[in-house]
Structure formats: C-alpha cells, structure tokens
Length: 279
Length: 286
Image (cartoon, rainbow over all chains, first blue to last red; front, side, top):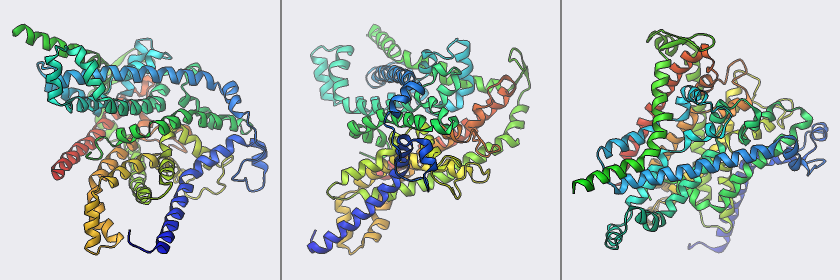
C-alpha cells in the first residue's frame, strides 16, 4: 500500500475494533453458556442482575455431567454410531464412485441419475415410512436402526466421483501398462490421489452423523438409547438447581466437533465450499 | 471381448450394489410408501387400513394443519435466510483482509459450525428462557408468546448458520481476482463502489448457492423447536417437519404421510431451483 504509516495504523485499528465487536456478538451466546455451566445455578439466579460472568464456580460440573446426566453412555453411543456411519459412507461412496468413474456398464447414466435423485429424498420426507420399516425390522432402540439407513449417501458418491474423474488419463494408462487391475488401481492410485476430496467428505460426513437429531429422536423411545444430541433435550426440563449439569453436557457435546474444526479446518472449508465456489 | 463386457457390467453393479440397496430400502421404497399410506386411513392400533384415495390428499393439502405448518416453515425460512446471508457478507467482508491475527478472527467467526442444532437450542435456552435465562426482557424473542416465539426459534437458526455462511462467503470473496479489484481502484472506484460494482456481482453465484442451502435447512427445521418450544406455545412453532414428526401414531399416519409428500414437493421445487441456478452459474462462469 502507498498510504502514510499513520493513517494505515489508524485504519487497521478501526478494523480491529470492528472485528472485535463482531467477535463479541458471535461469541456472547457461547460465553453465557460457559458462565451458566460453571456457576452454581442457585447462586447465579440470586445474584443481583444475574451477572454475565461466572459466580461461585463449580469445576466438577463436567464430571457430574458424566455421573448424573449419563453423558458417558450417550458419548459412547454417539461415537459408535458416528464411526459406523462415516466408515460405511466412505466405503459405499468410494465403491460406487469408482464404478461411475472407471467402469463401463449398461444404464450407467440412469443409475447415476437415480443416485443423485436421492438428494431430493431427505430423511424428513421419508421419516414416517422409514420409522415404520425400522419397527418392522425390530430395529427400534438399536445401533442398526441408528446407522443402516445412512450407510450410503449421494453427496459422497458425487464428490468422490468428481475426484476420480480428475485423475489424469496418463496416470490411468501408466497403471494399465503396469498391469494394475481395478482393485490395485483403486487402492494404489485412485484413493491416494483423491485424498483431499475424501478427507473433505469425511469431515462433512462426521458433522452430519454426530449432529443428527430427527432420526435418532424418531426411532428410539428408551433413554438408554439417547445419543448425545437427544440427551440434550433433558436440559429444557431440568430443575433450576440441575441446570448447570445439562449445560455442561451441551458444551462437552460440541467439544469433539470443535476439535475437528480446529485440526481439519482446511478440509471443512473445502468440503463446505465444494460446489459453492468454482475452484 | 464379449465376456469382458459382461465382466465390466458385473463389476459395475457389484460396486454399486451396497449403495443401491440402501437407497432402495431407505429412500425410494419409503417414498412410494408415504404416497401409499397417504391414500389410506389407519385404525387406532394400525392393524388395519382403509382405502380413502386421493381425497385425503386434497383434504390435508388444502387443510388448516398443512397450511399453518407451511406458513410457519416459510416464516422460519424468510427470517433465517436473508439475515443469514447478510450476516455472512458482513463477517466475511470484515475478515477478508491482511491483518496480523486475522486467522484468529476467522476461526471465531467459523466457530458456530461446531454447535449442533441441539447444542444451539441449549445455548439459547440458557439465554432466552423466561424463568432461568439471562435475558430478563426478551423483546421479540419471547419463547412464551405465540406471536413472537418464531423469532426466538429463528434467532437460533441464524446464529447457528453464521459459521457456515461466513466460511462459504469468505471463500467466494477470496476467489475474486485481485487484478479485477486493482483495475477498479485504478479507475478511481472507492471501496463502496468497488464492492457494489465488482465484488458483489462476482460473488452472487456463491450467495445464491448459500441461499438455497439455507432454505433447505430452514425447510427441515426441527431440533431447535423440539428442544425449545415443543411446537408451542399453542402450536405457534409447529413447522412442517414438526407436524410430520408428531403424526406417527396410526390414527394420524395418513395425514402425516400426505404432509410428507407435501414437504417432498416443496423441497423438490427448491432443489429444482438449485439445479437451475447451478446450471446458470456454470454458463456465466464460462
């Protein structure tokens, strides 16, 4: 920039002020959640003006979430369900994407259209019928019920196929010359080359599975089968003196996602913007 | 040669089989099934059903329940989408510059993406719930007032979507070529004029995509309502999906199925719009 140092300094200060103000707006709800988790709920309510800072801090609220809010069991169930769904979606997506990208078979275009058509059939639309199917299969309150309907997704097939189609012709010819069969080409060439796409999809798949709410709510009716997200419903019904425990559970529920956000930020950005921005 | 083609076909369908089985069982079959259930009435225990035909479709789709659900859903969408996109632009423009420590602000603005809908509901429960919440006078965000509860529910949606809208809009801004901005500057455009004449047209496709994505989220709003209001007060926040969810008892199954088909049609219209927009985008990008 060609401006004098002083105005530039001033302009930067202005932007820092704007950014800080916006940060406060974004973070305030989270801050108040932390305040309510840490504060003794009774002390906080009787404090004059119900302060925006923690009072009478009880650090053991997080361990109490495990003991009293059954957070441990919910965490284990959510983790299990999420791992099964993510791994399942990866496998089915890679296999189907491979077929669409590299194998010639009859009615391929039709099959691809059929696959993409499932994007028009979110679980909200099929909920009534699917929950009956689950009941008929005897899968109410079960890991099968929570996971099986989500073991394939058109989004994953689409993204991975795009990645596969981007593999250079030369690379395929070279692999063919070396006598690579489908399996070896997939494992040694296609997957390694498209790792960024697969990673981006994995993060999206994780977010969707971990945060899923409507489906587990619809096909479980036993609190033993509450995932973390469903367990949070209890907060709204908790008594005033128990509120901090439920709120702490909500913070803990967001923690794994926050860690993924921090460590896999690049992948999240790439996954979310796939299709949104011409790269 | 012939056998090789047969082998290719076998390989292709073998690879597709797992996905196709899931799609058939949990997407296409249930679509057919909700359509079918919509043509029937169940007895109280769900052991027997009676054919009522298309009349149930016309009754439900023109009835008050569906209309209310659609209108409440539309309110949620109309509140969350424009404000969400505007906030996304605001945050992204503010954070799209070279400053020391800008990464930290970008992480903060993205952070709400870590908050699931249920977690977000708890966050706003703690803020807005009248007896135990932080805000003693919730203004229009009043969970107990039938006329205003939708604002409270929509507020949770807006806040939760901030991270997503910020990330996508920022990526859009960063894809605007620097030489274009430089050319605008050399032409004597000020920052406001540059934004209006150069940046905004360049990111319009991104914003359209974002609007469609947020609309789809809005059409599917459920968790925040289930946690915060349970559809209340007095049914004031019963969105379509909430109504569908609460009509799974045999007696209401027919009605719920028709509403599901209604939601499918609405979602389909939005998805068609999405494809149309994407198509256009590819055209003017070329």
